[in-house]
Image (cartoon, rainbow, N blue to C red; front, side, top):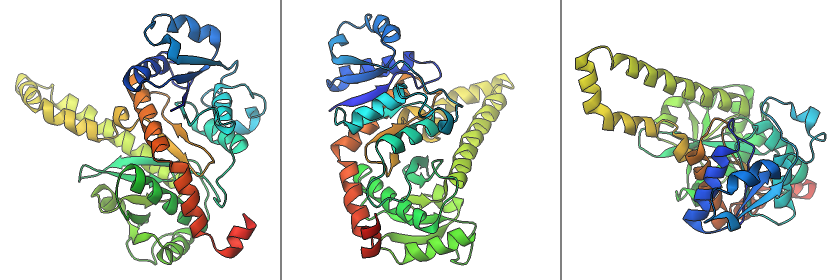
Amino acid sequence: MRIVLDAMGTDHHPAPEIYAAVEAVRRWGDPIYLVGPRDVLEPRLEAYPDVRDRIHIVHASQVFRHGEKPGQVLRQKPDASIAVGIRMLKEGEADAFVTMGDTGGALAYALLILGRIRGVRRPALIAPVPTRTGKYCAILDVGANAECKPEYLLQFGIMAAVYVEHLWGRENPRVGLLANGEEPTKGTPLVQEAHRLMAASSLHFVGNVEPKEVFAGEVDVAVTDGFTGNVVLKTMEALTKLITDALKEGLTLSWQTKLGALLARPGLRRMKSRLLDPVEIGAVPLLGVNGLVFIGHGRFQGPAVLSGIARAREAVAMDLVGKLRDRIAASLTPQEDAAS
């Protein structure tokens, strides 16, 4: 299995990426292709003679940095590590690409180099969110498309259902449409029309869902536009930090609370691991592009990057792109098929 890892994606690159590459080779035995400046990577890899021959450096002289506008630098940086790694996918030299770099940059390069799966209107970024049941719910889009049309949301649901069915092992996953009420008349015109399309589709569509149903684990997939999904995700992250910080402050007020914290430590650790633990999540796929592109967060450390590689390996093993192609093709009307 050929996994390409962007060595320049995290905020503290390339140390987390090198850690992940070394551990991935030790764990699975397959070679890792590490993309970045050779003069930066080569000296650091000398410290790992046991795996050095299975970590292949692919030179990239440029870096797409967080905060840069894709439209301005997309063609100015053809040798950026993201571009080089995705180009390897395009040319059949790799099975999956993993980056902790800029989401907008990864999306832009993926669309430019790989293009979309035939029939896909827009790619979407999927993210797992914790639920009361202990299982994750897949929410999308969480940032790839700020503005959407109803037919985009329908395809998001189709693609997420494929992902959840084959990578999470949930047969006939329940798909909900994120809204401000359960009734079909609730929500914006976008949500109302998307509801009509999804209800008429072959999806196991359970209707509109509010956040309370999502976090209760009553759906396997929650569909929304990229602006709303990104706000939901960032709100969850901020709320998680608020809760953990408040707990830390409250549990260190006195010797009695410190004793209570000591006794409650196992439970607190379990709670933290369930609330968007980056080590477990690792990276999420950009669904709809014609190749496996996984994107994580720039703040991630080595163990989380390693988990991103693990998620990519699972997708390769399950032929996720092939299954997405088949399901999208089956969902198209003759007119849509002819136009795609």
